[in-house]
Image (cartoon, rainbow over all chains, first blue to last red):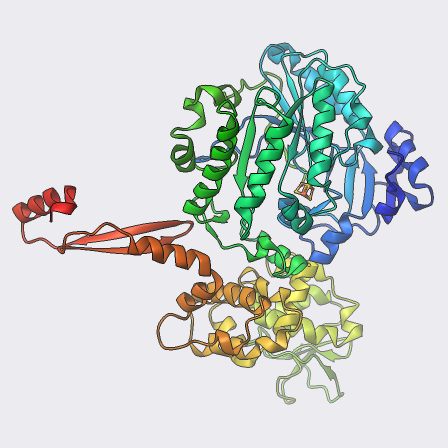
Length: 381
Length: 254
Ligand code: SF4
């Protein structure tokens, strides 16, 4: 944490007075000092609704600390008819991300010009506790990186420590952090029950430099994953979104080789691959923010069955085949699945859908719904 | 209640493309809101009314092009602009007030009248035209917009064309390179420019298709993210069909 200049990264930190005495708010006040302002409820200059490109960029530079009023838990968004889904529960402890990937789906989703951090993590833990009676022995999986990166601001919030500690009491449950940062030092000393997965979305350095602005480099992500592995955390990689470019084969080959050089299949229970995809309406804001200078806006994409823009089916298959074959050439024991893909792609590449693959079945087993009155999905946005 | 007033009013410079709901000239705090009506119209002073609601009462639901014209007209009159509740104004029109919409309305103002007429006639939505806000300098796009209007594209063709054209324009193609080459489909022409690699791959795969018997015609088409094949068989009767289907199963013999 010492070598990150947090204060330079944000223009303003606004703290809702009612949370000013929480640990998180006090820590922010200490770190950001003269950038801190206080407000009652919503910031005065908050803009709600569809943001322009400029407003969206601004929203990554100003933080609002407040509490979340609704229910924290909702079902994984991948559960749509016709799409394979990797079943888990999503815990959003904030809203918006401080990094800036050109393809990020938050661009068509964020509706406030502030990066929001919820201070009432204890309420989220209470909700989890409330369905523990009926679910304690079920394979509950909770992921924290859906609308905010799990770890990029974690040295400030230290939420990872609270969550890891909580999950110690639920060894059958799994906690998943998803990140493109390399910020793991803040929780490495925590005692854990071997049920914490730290997963990295990863791409070749060529793509990181062009499309994943403000994220950790490829090497930094691998180094951070190695640190986690050494401390007994489960590690996973999502090679997602694969982005076509003229040198894609070379660059993805290097990526696969590097993973295989540093990890064995038993270190990484599951790897996933996915290709570039986004909602058609997202194209406007991406074009506005990155013009056609990005491999993402330039991409030759077409509307797929689910209404998202994707590469041509055959090209996707070629890209997935390439990565899978490369992994298997290192060691046939590598297990790889495709995220957010249609059953046809699964069948074409793996020969059958994930539910029929003995390796992957466990990860796609539908989970029992909790008996408590937690409702899915909730929507505050 | 209508009066003929001689006083000289300031006029809001807006003329809707369909009729205004009031046959009288409506005055609001010295402004003739539908002031482009003839000066001999009877006048009614509705200064006590809420301006936002009054504009809706006068003009009802407007097409996007009209909205951009009305929006610009109000912006030119600070005393009116201050009194308008824009979020409510756009809510009345079934739209959400946000910077993207405002940017689009501004871009639309500078586009050629022929294009605006086309957009009005086809009831083009804000979503359809949203790609235009990525253009830093829409003036270079004027000529292209005229072609969209001249070719009388349908709304969905227009939407597709605008998306492709904005991409290509931002990729550095000149307006000249984007003009239609002949009477055939302009959208196909633009798609080939926008998706050259997919086009090439489609072509290669079409060329390496199995040789089919001469009684079938196979056409390769793109359907979203998939390439599909459409097959046509002509047959005379059931036995002819059975025979042809049998031969289809072993195409290499045919
Ligand atoms: S790291 Fe994830 S959430 Fe953050 S900008 Fe990139 S894609 Fe979006």
